[in-house]
Amino acid sequence: MTELLHPYDITQEADIMQPLDFNRRSRLKHVDRTFKSEIINIIRLTEMEKLFQVRILDDTARERFSFRPGQFVMVEVPGYGEIPISISSSPSHKGFIELCIRKAGLVTTILHKARRGAPIGIRGPFGTHFPIEKMRGCNILLIAGGLGLAPLRAPIFHVIENRSNFKDVHILYGTRQPSMLLFNYQYEEWDRIADIDLKVTVEHGDESWTGQVGMITDLLDEVDIAPKETYAIICGPPVMFKFVCNRLTKEGIQMNRMFVSLERRMHCGMGKCCRCNIGSTYTCLSGPVFDYWTVLNLKEAI
Image (cartoon, helix red, strand yellow):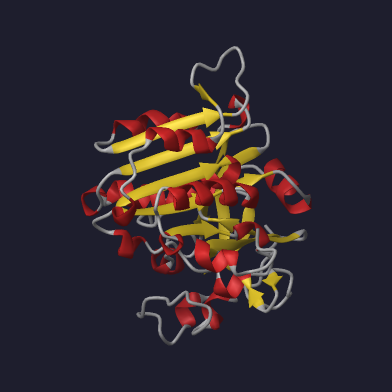
């Protein structure tokens, strides 16, 4: 098969035995290279979203690759371009990463036509991450709307795998209608874990829907919030941030204890194309994860 990606032999790196530092501010050389990869599995989630399991081909690169919840990668489809995609899998898994991709443009449409074994390229990971470490010993609210469950899935896995490090955990998820729910095959698994409370709602139910109907903020009515002991991670459409974060503010949670992702603004991931900037702030260099206080001080961020 003809090689479509630029060759990259990681075994020639002088610091081969050193762990990779994926902070692009300090060692940009690592994230500006493409890891040759392949799609090893495809799971249809909805009519518009698919979950791709992607494996880096080089054994050494695959073992050294690591990321933190909230970061994203650039996915290259040879001959068509590349797109930024949040990582949806557990940071502790080394064999592959999972990427939830909505069919929305040329590159994503081509990916949705791909089959198992298709070659792609991976750069990254990029971006800031959710500060899970500082949340230890506290309650956590994990709130997602629509496609926002994709980037939220990584911190969900981290919390589940390190359950003893946190107090009460609430997962709140909402979409417009039942057919748009993502990862519904995992809801029962998450809900069975001790001291993890999962609540799901849709704005408009159908004949098959037996769950709650309403806005995602309605789910907060059922949560007993201790503001001084609680952190919140919110992912979803920017318009959702105002409603959810304003509600959490009324509950007494400080804005610097709420974290949102502006991953929808991502483009090149390296501050070169200038398409993600908000005033003088480059989302790809300073984000995509910000505390809500910072977001409110970025004009037109949401």
